[in-house]
Length: 254
Image (cartoon, rainbow, N blue to C red; front, side):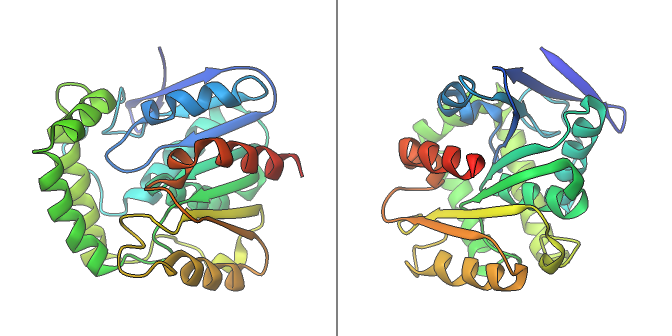
């Protein structure tokens, strides 16, 4: 297992395959284990880089995650990219990992080739989503399948990880709101926004949620593409894995 140091803490990362570097960024309350299947598809052609953000997976635990969680995780990614000197890296971030990916591209565009941001909320936290998240997380901790997922992601202290992640998301909505420190108008790398019209979180109340939110973001950025899958749950990257793989490889090759 490989680790690098960030703020005197050990952050787990892994490299598999060979070729141009491709970084996969996991979502909230998850770890790089969520990419087990799709990473094997990419590693036939790419050097796949995985990371567990601090407080998750095989990385060091924290007493509490910061409110500005997705920027904090972007700083960890930047530390890894600068230490390893990969050159320009293509990135796929899904759910919360998409917010991290956009932050990375905004803060250090010279390190990013092309970027896919999948199944995420938009530019700002939505209070209704945050309130539902708290209830969903409590229900999930009583669901056997969800408990197995969390244990696979984090190990035996999974409940502590989930609670810490939930607390940070709630504090972010109350204290900060915005997901990014810089204007989307300054985003330079080419970007593809993806999601599913059946996403049980974002689209439960409005099947056109992604179309509206992503459309506004693309307008602000002045460039980029959107692809919405007609079916599949959250995140689209995994619920539409085969179609997403084909779409992403074509986007990165263009």
